[in-house]
Length: 159
Image (cartoon, rainbow, N blue to C red):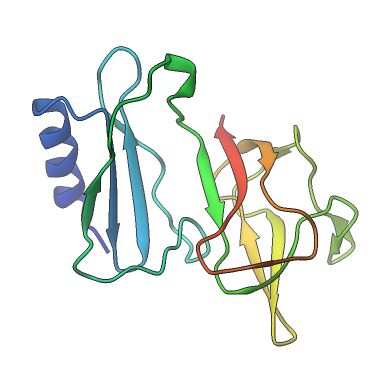
């Protein structure tokens, strides 16, 4: 996992070299930095739980700069993308229940640690939880769709 000093060094290098967007992958954790229209680089919230921003990547793919900055400021995303922690069947429909609580729908505000989806693999259900308080802006897959590890499931807007 990246330590704080490494993250600060990366952010400073992005600012110094005017890099608008950067994705850093290390130990299956992905951190995306995006510079807003003003030019300052900010880090999207890092993954605290394994199911947030997971990617199956090789260790030698530690940094991969994006091709070009977004053309319109609205296209620059500061949202959080939650991905599939394992391959399996995604349960994301708001009618699905977890411990008798329905899953949230698009537009709902979710709390840190709240279960917002499930991925079933071999009769085991892996929870996808919100890393922080946020608004669920988009459910990116259909309910009961087969997903691979790292497939985007939800988009959240931090509050």
